[in-house]
Every structure is written in C-alpha cells, then in structure tokens.
Amino acid sequence: MILKEIYIPPFSPFSVKVGAYNTKGQGPFSPVTIVFSAENEPSGVPDGVWARSISATEIEVSWHILSASPERVLGYEVVYWEDDTKPETMGKVRVSANQNKVNISGLRGYTQYFLTVSSFNTAGTGPLSPTINVTTKKSPPGQPPLNVEWNLIGSKLTVHWEPVISLEMESDVTGYQVSYRRNRHKEINTITTNLTSVELTLPADDDYIIQIRALSDGGEGMPTEPINIHKLSMSVRGSRAWRPNTIPVSLLSIIALSTLRPALC
Image (cartoon, helix red, strand yellow):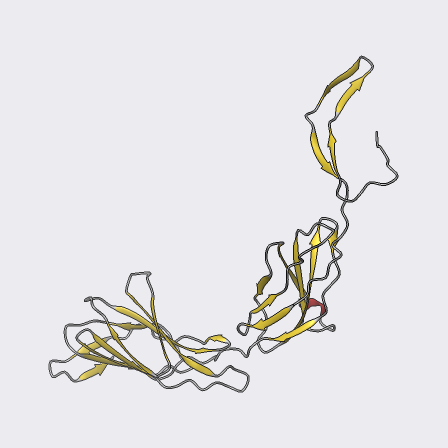
C-alpha cells in the first residue's frame, strides 16, 4: 500500500514500521525505523573558488564552504577539463562537506585547465560556480645529470656531475637531489643542493647505491642509473658518463692499485 500526501516538506523524517497480514489476521510489526522524504538539490553556489599549479601534473583547488544552506550539503564536486573540444579530458572529484580544497593529479604538463565547483547531496548537484582556469607547470627536465664522477677517501665521498640544461618546454632547474642508501637496505637518504657537487659521509664499511636527479617547479627530473659505490679500505675514484640511448651498466668495478692510481673497469 502506498500512502500519498499532497505536500511533504523535503527531507522530512517519518517513523515507519511494517507488518504482514493474511486471511488469518495481522502479523507482528517490524521495529520502527526512520525514513526521510526526498530532498532538494543544494541551491547555494560555492564562492571564492581559486586554483594554483603545484607541479606539471597536479593542481590545488580551494573554495569557501557554504555557511548557510536551506538544503543539506553532503560535499563538493570539482569538474575540470582542458577545453570544450576535448570531452574525453573531463574529470571530476568529490570531497566531504567539511573540506574546502582538493588536489587533482594525473594532469598534462603546461596545459590550461578549466574548472567549476558545486555542492551536492542525494538529490544531485547544485548550481556551478563561475568557470576559472589554471595552467599546469612545465614538465620537469627529461634528461638525467651526465658525466657523474665520484671520489671516495676514507668515509668522505665527493660526487660531481654536469649541470642539466632544460629544453624549451621543460621547467628550469632549481637544484638537484642526491639519494643514497646502503646496499641491501631499503632506507633512502636524500640531500638537496643548488650546486653540481655534493660531499657525503658514509660511516659504515658497506657498499652504497646513489642516484642523482634535477629538481624543478614542474617536479623531479629523470634520475641517473643507480651508481654502485664499493667502499674499500683505501682511496678510490670512479666516473660514469650517463648518455641517453646507451645500455645502462649498474655495476662499476673499481680496482684500487697499490700505487693509488685509479683504474676503471
């Protein structure tokens, strides 16, 4: 049986219980539960919508939370796209009602995106905010540092490399990141520098693995192939000219001669 009312206010609560009956009579009722009538979509428009580029693949979008809305607000929806001729680039993300910002990732570098923000509930989405646009940063450098050279004396390791030159459509280099870890260990240490050399202290008699990459506003650049540092009991030196389209060699065999003249295998 369906009960019809002339008017029921949106999202009104009702106490409901259900019972079965047959020719023998009425059966027991279910426990009372609360149900709500259908609600209306939010009528408020989020304002203060603002966006900024974080990297070549990520932007941050923020807005003002609706302070007073006659309708229930469950959250906010951000819709973004490249342009009207590319519907396949459209995407959307949703966050809960207590959030006023969201990061959108997986975007294309140096690309303009348009976006709007709206609130939503179970009835649907409310009106869209005015469209704004933001351009992602240029992609990070695609070339790793070249001609890496290193010198190990005792526990002091000095590493040098050639500066990375960004291409026209790449972000300018702002510095370098040197990552190193002990062989057969997972813990990675990182050092950032705006120079093309770095000095490290490697305290244990163990082998180390080092990688170097350029840093930019668009993100982290391409790393070098892993450089294996064999910590011997005497001074050693090694180098590697990292060139594109060459077969990477991940292991450098360093022989320290008794004359302390370095030789590369």
